[in-house]
Image (cartoon, rainbow, N blue to C red; front, side, top):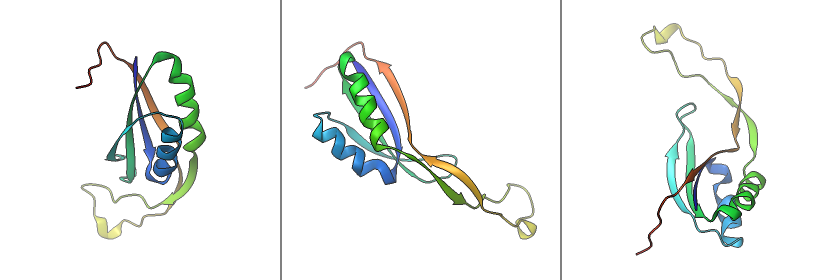
Length: 109
């Protein structure tokens, strides 16, 4: 058995949730915040049997895409914020960060 932890951008959350349900995967959704852009994410916790992990990863890959986004950098800490002029930069956001962890025991009460 494996625990798949998938951190996805909020824009992909509903689409992934629907795809998981359609394919009989049960998931727990947690609201989370990314540290880099401080934007909203959703973390999915999904327990599944080992042979189903490739199918699950395919569903995540199909429903979570990366995209480019313009962001204004946060002002530097300790510096004079009055003279700081943030220039927007283009960064890649989205997609999914996925961890597959082994589970030694599983109990459902």
